[in-house]
Length: 84
Image (cartoon, rainbow, N blue to C red; front, side, top):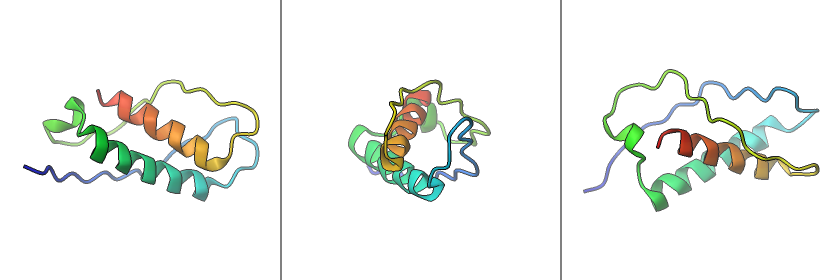
């Protein structure tokens, strides 16, 4: 049976980044997070429902020259793992 969830991301704090297109990062985050939820399933941390006020996605690896889209994908993966 399909599971319906709603995820609302109010803020993504990108501390220590030089000028970057935050909208591209946000868009890539949404696309990648959606893909992970569809392909990998809803993580156990979200199955019980309710509200997650804050989620620390932990650390993720960035390399010089990464495009905003790649950064968004890395953030999405870190968030997804945080719900495990």
